[in-house]
Image (cartoon, rainbow, N blue to C red):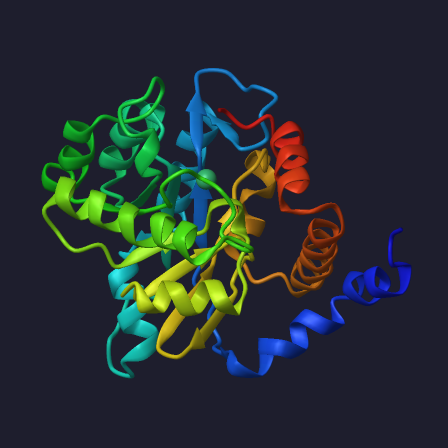
Length: 286
Ligand SMILES: [Zn+2]
């Protein structure tokens, strides 16, 4: 029998927020961080896919409006060191999952504008059909000056995982990438965006400096770990792209309520069912 009272309390997001919200220190930030996934020649129904033309238009918009890309490392230094300056119109570009299309199509466009980006890689997908191979990941860093960081091992939500499974996702994937890149990995982005205090504690213990979630302009610090929000680019279109670059407080409130809804829907239906439905909804591959 479903416990309606318990689920209702969970639905309002009361219980879980109380547990750890006070541990999080909120920081103010207005630097946009954009996240792309797969690029395709033509627009497809997958909401996380961007057409090459649309991506090229976004980059042209950034250049025309005098935006300069900065690295995640400089972003962290800017928010943690009082005198570390960055360009007035700074932004960050990130790519999740390690799609082959990011190397094939996005990279030449980024190079044309002299833009830098961070590529978050799911280590179990390296070399699989449609995903980058080790040589391409190394080339991203050595030839093009891009940053390659971690997006977990199997691309599964981290919240609710056993400690063993969390270690696989946080530590094994980090070591795999470090061996492959020959450099220490400091940053990760959450697959599916889900996290809680236990996950953040493990992320910090795994020696990450910052972790990326999917709430635009979100920035908190907990026990020395930065939790940084990004804007997921999905079918924004040319006219709406500039909205992704500005702090939209109404969108913040909407995003907050959506995150409460999603979080508690996940608790009610269970992680597995939520992730199954999420994959159908986003038509995510694989
Ligand atoms: Zn992903």
